[in-house]
Image (tube, rainbow, N blue to C red; front, side):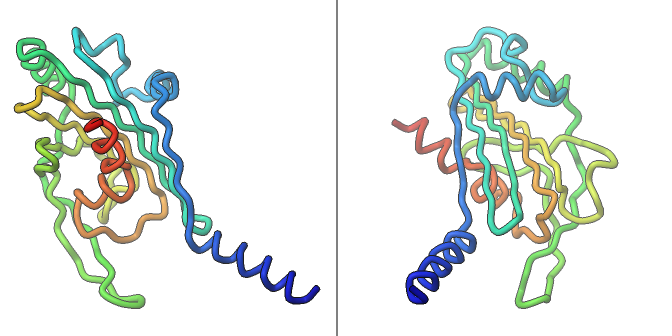
Length: 189
């Protein structure tokens, strides 16, 4: 009996340590979120588009959790140019580098500068200017808007992680916390 209890506790501990993540591609989930969030566009605001892909990504390790909403909109060439101009007019992008830190050992940190504008997977990603929402370290809440002139797609990303202490790059945020690799693998099918 003691062996069974120990085995059960070991399995529970292993599950807690490994964490979990959940993805949802239901467009209704995105629409519900966008209705409450002024920085993420509603589908009715997108203009004439060819396709829309959404991904809600939730992750948790121990008691620490994060979430991200992703919207990627594909346009025809002319519609893309007007949608891009509209997005650039609507949003104000951060221009100053942000201070961040990365772990270099147990309880040891190294300061890093994080560029608010970067290229990732063909998108020119831009961090939205949020004023006081960004602390003097990495933003716990971030919005990105990305433009891919080659594929005529615009990406909108919301990210929230109140517990994030360190990150090496903005690209890491998209891949590790926002589910972008999942999003791109799904779009390639």
